[in-house]
Image (cartoon, rainbow, N blue to C red; front, top):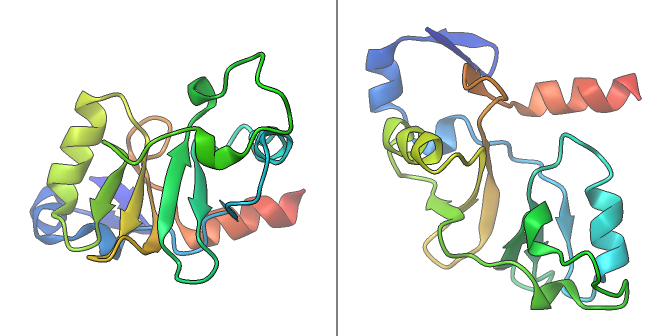
Amino acid sequence: MSSVTGRSMTYESAVRSRVADVMVTCPKTLGPLSRVDDLRAVFSDNHVHMALVVDPDDGRLITTIERPDIPEAAPNSVAVTELGTLVGRTVQASYPLDAATTAMRFEARRRLAVVDDFGRLLGLLCLKRYGTGYCSNEGIRARADER
């Protein structure tokens, strides 16, 4: 059994679940005018594995950025929209949770941006460090309160 948003989940219920059932709905985001220095500040939190760049007008996900996407020599003034990719880093909210989790484990990935049919960001699928469950809004809030 794995813990999902504070509940135990059997394999059978995981098979019937969708990504939307466990996604974090309050991920940190950056706007398209953000720069590499903003990105480095976001990644100063070790819990952040993926930065999400979102168009503030329509909520469309522009790019996802992971630490290896940032060249060490990149000047702080470089626009974040020049980095990252959406390829292999997004999933539809209606996608089966077990299939998404299997793909994440196969690719050694712990985060997938969750989008709708129009590419708008809905949330983030976050596999916990040991693969025993998924991050939750409540867990993220509790960690923020501890700081």
